[in-house]
Length: 198
Image (cartoon, rainbow, N blue to C red; front, side, top):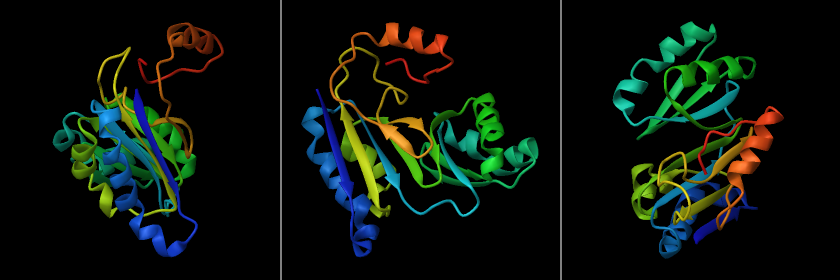
């Protein structure tokens, strides 16, 4: 049992309130998923290319000097915006693949990537997750959120939704997928790999 919320704002005047409206919707779904929560926000496009959202269990150490170190490693300009255990790393689109590889090499978990999408998710009650990322202050055109009650897999940040499925694309689902291990093996044979255990 999980809770799914989504909101698409047709009026530009509401864009600054997207995070506030989605946070209230997410918190309302707490009884359907108290284990973890997450939200994908589609906000302003990255001015310098692509945004890669990453997570670390030790953000103070992981994000200190990340912009300079990553810039040197990939040979391109990098900006980093830290939001609690997550950071949004902006790089030129041509440097995205090199940046993702370098970030994973540093032990950072990739939450998602895209021109406009940022994904924030963690273990805990939706209210607490909303507060730790200050979701209420986020703006944008649309977003999707999820509250999770784990039934088959561990309660972890990587097991929380939304899942990034492609650039500027994410997925949430309700219920358990009983054949996920079989599907993972089939997809791996086709060169498709997942970052989650569920």
